Length: 214
Image (cartoon, rainbow, N blue to C red; front, side, top):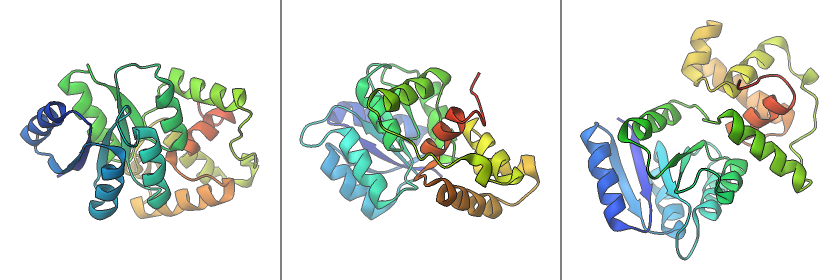
């Protein structure tokens, strides 16, 4: 059962999401109306997935996501947005959000995104990945510059599969290794490349030509 934290300042929207998710066998373990509540709930309950609205009073979704991921780098946050090109989406993805979903998406799309992120995927389409990389360059920010020559062949393959959106389970099956081994290798990859999360790892792999999303 996937445990979900809902974060949105509109009670009716949260109620609609709760009804949908629970009808599909998921468990809503909490609701937050602003970013500060989200940080507290996430720290207390460690949900499998956090559905995070961007525009909220008191503390917006981007800042809340940044704080949550500082506390727990493995937290799986999905941003909820009205507009695909919302600038805040870029900032959230740079901080480590696993993906985003539009508020007008159909139920099938939303449920698929939640299940895939819960399984460990980071959902970055080609346009979003390129936009985020461009944003790094525009602001003269840098992903770590350590060359991937430091990675061995197996680590490079794991990083490539991660960037292509495969979950730990899928990577394990493809490489005929255990999920525990995948987790350990990813931890070593993050340390070698000075990365903090899967989203940064996917962006790094795309930038360095290890993987592409086309």
